Amino acid sequence: MISISLCMIVRDEEQVLGRCLDSIREAVDEIVIVDTGSADRTRQIAWQYTDRVFDFSWRDDFSAARNYAFSRASGDYCMWLDADDVMTPANVGKLLRLKKNLQPEVDMVMMPYITAFDEKGRPAFSYFRERIVRNSSRYRFQGRVHEAIPRQGYVIFADIPVEHRKAKAGDSDRNLRIYRQMQAEGEPMDGRSLYYFGRELLTHGEYQEGIRILREFLNRPDGWVENKIDATRQLAACLYGEGREEEALEALLAGLKYDVPRGETCCDLGRHFLDRGKYEQAVFWYRQALEAEKKMDTGAFVQEECYGFLPAISLCVCYDRMGMRDKAKYYNDLAGKYQPDSPYYLQNKTYFS
Image (cartoon, rainbow, N blue to C red):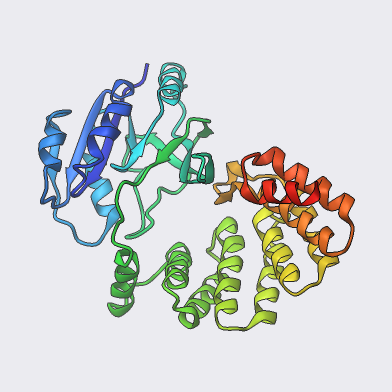
């Protein structure tokens, strides 16, 4: 059976570190904690779980810190978690079975990362991450922000989700600050960095620069296709923010050239036409969203509601406004199958009755 070193970088995580380690400790053989400058009890808590606690001077580079943690690992494989991540007992059981049965030629294990939940605690946003990798210098993080290990070697996918359960608000300006620093210092940005820089600019309402950066990314040859598809949606959001609606529509339509339409893009297109009273066109795109395949194994960001509830409830609205009440009721009932406790579904149910 393989051995796994859990490698973590932490800073001021006294609220959640114990919760994380309690959830995973039985599935790993070694715990490596790298502290990047805590001022609370994080280090004392870490010492309760492991004697492999190290200091690392923070220099606005997540990859550097994570790779240092990996360098201290002695197991066959390295696994990473953030301090506010947890694994359920059922998924820890799956991880133990994976560990027992993992073939020695496997280099990387991709696992779902659930980073958002709805009001009922159901997964709302998820994607696959490289969670367990062979302990080798070949498998190291890249990128100062939104760091990742390039997919390579023999890769397998395991349905063993890690849940990101934040307990406190982070520094919402940190990532943009790092990108600004890279920009000021003339540090070259690869395609992935440009993509995430553009997303950060959108989040901060800096639409004009977001448009420029996202277009620069889309014009580069080194962009990953899933990032390009999503970048067209982020670009459209920036353009909507600037009131450039026709250009926003063109950006969404440009996303269709990369692969079969994703549910997220179809829902965005449906919303564009719904908001403008073009209900037949909206219906077309929302029906496409219902038929779209969730591309989980590509590593794409997946908004769960775009593959069921959102297009169904939106079709209900479209058909109702078109005076087709039977079809409207049908799609409201369908929406209820996805989210039976949704207030929108329940209000519509009362309306139709």
